[in-house]
Image (cartoon, rainbow, N blue to C red):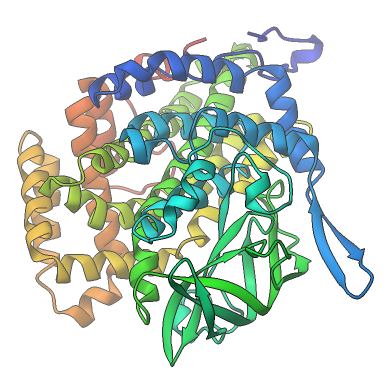
Length: 540
């Protein structure tokens, strides 16, 4: 690992280190959640993701974002997108580990979550097409024609070629839900689907309309929402039609995004685009719901990964930078700040890994409660906390953190997207209230579990009683306070998980800092034994 200092008290960049080996809590999570068998895979991937070549690929893919290229044909004009070689290398590594599909066959969701989390610490944009491909499988697997996709969809070979599926070794699937007049309100979509023929004993459709955000536009297919006979339905829209012709999905422009720059997001026009229906006609929302839990969990994992990497960078910098005659990490107030950041990161990691474990045990009542209620709450909380905490980690670096030579600006630019994608914070909070109201059995199971775990700590017992009293308010009043309800719920979930899995001194520090009276600004709580917390946090 490179950790020496250069002259003038400047800390060299962190590279050639093992992202997994430096994270004792993640190792504990794999052991505790029945995935000890995946330790070797994670160790190898952690070494790869922390290596200088992969870190440089991450830099390259973001400094050289995808470019739209217009191609003039004999009778028409088409558009394609060129990516830097580093983008393909990043995706190739994800595919080689099966992060895009394997867990649906092996039920190894914790392994997948850990690999996803490790990769996200090196480069976040390349996770987007993998998330969408992975999340599409539950929505597609019951279709009669799904078996045609299986050899490509479950292949570990990354194939970036733009050609009909028959000539490819692997595939990716993207999404095209958002229209400019709708945003989160997908029922306002105006894209129209009209019946057009038959394929593999299935009614085919032609889609006409416009999509404002079309994620991973060169994917081999997209799941798209469109109106059919006045009802919203879901459709599978391949990039290439069965007859070998390019489908009527015309890329109009690429979005110039603040972050997530390595990944392409496009504006497209659908002109007689050939499509197959997914799910029952008129039940497009229900088809998409099969994908939502996974995409939201990946938002939590992605934000937890950004948070972890920012904390690693902050702790590393503080251990080597000298200020007023001491290393920065030895300064008392800085220890308080770093401890707060470390606890935020570990709590986010445990929460995301337990949610992944719930996917493995999705038939148990408690797992169903976590998947339905805690997932949107976690998506609201962890994604939002990542923005503040990454900014705080940048401040630990001082002025150097604000300079593009280091990793902090890219981490900060990446952080907000997970709060926006797959439903904003308000959408998540309202969804939590909806789940609490419409799933009374799951609500009772979740609150019962939190109560049992909270009983060992007075502050948590008080917090669970407060939450239960708040939930007795009428629906209108609850909606005004939805963010407060979700904050209380998710902090209880994080605290009880820390009590269950983390060392007692870590769990106690988290509870005291999150549930004692006072503000929540980072570093405001005084920790009794900060050295132990910091020593465990990042091991080099």
